[in-house]
Image 1 (cartoon, rainbow, N blue to C red):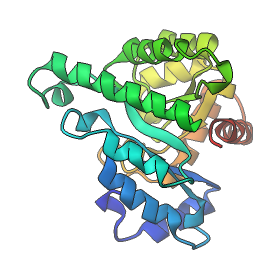
Image 2 (cartoon, rainbow, N blue to C red; image 1 turned 90 degrees about the vertical axis):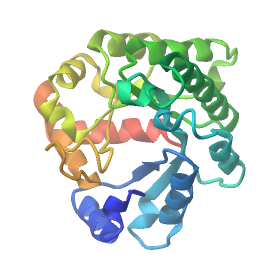
Image 3 (tube, helix red, strand yellow; image 1 turned 180 degrees about the vertical axis):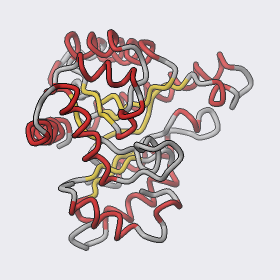
Image 4 (cartoon, rainbow, N blue to C red; image 1 turned 45 degrees about the vertical axis):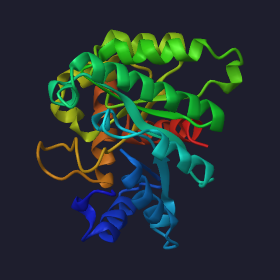
Length: 258
């Protein structure tokens, strides 16, 4: 929502989402600049935008050029932040080309992700995780970090956003570590994600749009109202009613976010 794609019609986009039954929207940042814009969106007093909630993080696409500390200092200033992220690991070639070498970029991504995991623990907030081309490596890294935390109650809930890894890694993350997975409208054109959703319990799924990306039609602007498409797709794959999926994913989201 902080992207220029919505500068001219954000109010209408939020109204459409409300009409589709969307009650709350988590708006996550990719860097410090987006965090500032998101804060303004979520701070407005209209009935629609009061339903938007901020998540601050540093996306791996901005590593190593950006400093995660510029984002993390926002947590000391804003008590309304509901999650840390979007953060994570990204091993896609265009992202790894950002630095001196792919190995350096990967290492810096891990350092920045660990700092954000630590922030989630410190502020007792869930972690919204991006994993692209990193498969089980992202999950393994997070699990290793969580294993260092002795107090189980201080371990943050983990939400894997639009995970593109193999279904078996997602299943293990749920059964062994209690991770959650969010499903965008692009599931209708993503056989691998559909396979994953079939195998994951509904109690560990939530809906996401990832607007303006990951819409049902490639290269067309996506928007929050389209989570209804995610909901219908999950219902079809699991042979459930749309109402059942909507009710359970809504309950799951309320468990993840404070």
